[in-house]
Structures are given as structure tokens and as C-alpha cells.
Image (cartoon, rainbow, N blue to C red):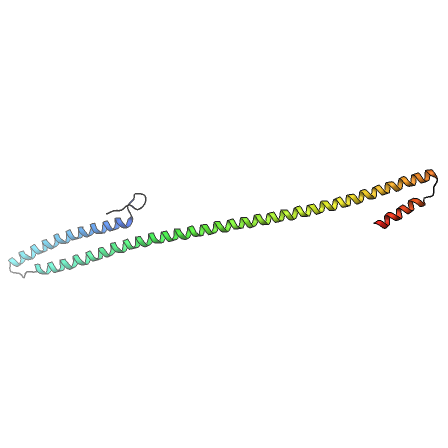
Length: 182
């Protein structure tokens, strides 16, 4: 009656039950042998004129056998119930661990998704800022280029004016017009 547990090994509770039953049988055999020996001695003593105590041994033997048998059976039942409870506890703990592992995995996945979203938003903000900076740099470069061109044009006009003998009123007017535009 030794049932394999998982890996082909007998369950400890089944081995304990087997040991208790074997021990009970051994106890019964020893008790029966002691009873027969005492009954024989009691009958021999009664043959010599002493009172017959063999009936008393039968009732004591039956009660002791019943007490031991009931105790052994109760122990085996308790051990089997403890084994069932331990197996149920193991299943429940496994279920709780599995549920917690799934919850942790789901939380981790959500955290990664949120991190990905935040990183994307950060990159988009960085690209937007870089684009604005590039546009501003283009405007500044364009303004500087325009300023350089106008300065060069003024320099050319002055040079032409001096070579033609004209007064420098013309460049002054163009400078005032550019200053007003700014």
C-alpha cells in the first residue's frame, strides 16, 4: 500500500503508516505469546490448587490490544490528514506565488511601457527644441548676412561716391533707411 509520490519514491506518510501497522502486528504477536505463556502458567498454578487467573488475562489482553490498535489507527489517520493538508498548502502557496509572479511581470511591463512613453516624449521635446534653435540660428545668420551685405553695399557706395566726387549724403540716407527698418 505504498503509493509513489512524485518521482517514484514512496510518500513518508505511507511509510509511516506501513511501519505503524507492522509495529502493531508485532505488538499483537508478542502480546499473544505473552498471554499464552501466562495462561499456561496460570493453569499450571490452578492445577496445584491456586486460583485460576487465566480469564483475567483474556480481558486485559483484549483491552490492551484494542487501545493499541485504536491509537495506532488514530496516528495513521492523523499522519495521512497532515500529508493531505501539507499537499493542499503546497498547492495554494504555488498558486499564490504564480499569481504574484504574474502581477510582478505585469507591473514590470507597465513600468517599461511608461518609461518608453516618457523617453519618446523627452526625445520629441528635444527634437522640437533643436528645431527651434536651428530656426533661430537661421534667422540670426540671415540677419547677420543681411547686415554684412548692407554694410558692404554702403562701403561700395561710399567708395563710388568718393571716386565720383559726390558728397557722402547718399550713404547717410541709406544708413538711416536701414536703421529705420531694424
